[in-house]
Image 1 (cartoon, rainbow, N blue to C red):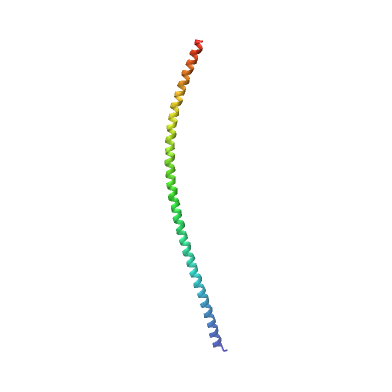
Image 2 (tube, rainbow, N blue to C red):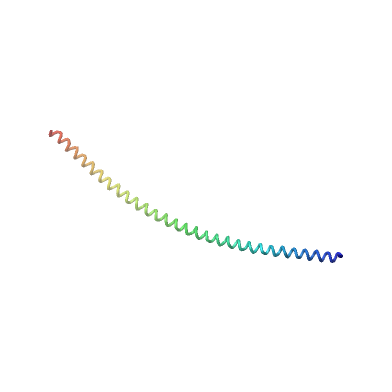
Length: 107
């Protein structure tokens, strides 16, 4: 085998190896593209879920604020009612004390 034949054989081997690497690289790139697409789709699903959770959280927060405000109104009403009851009980107690004193005097 002379130099020209050796050179042609080496060139053919090199071109074959380049073709193999090229094919393998193309397969890897296709797989990588599929993986990237799957990741992007998954990311999109997570984004929608996060958006839904944020909306639910905002709605729940607003509902809780309404409930808390309603409870505050009820508590203030109870406080007023209890103040009235307290004043009434103090009045009744004072009258009972007066009657007790009068009964002791009468004995």
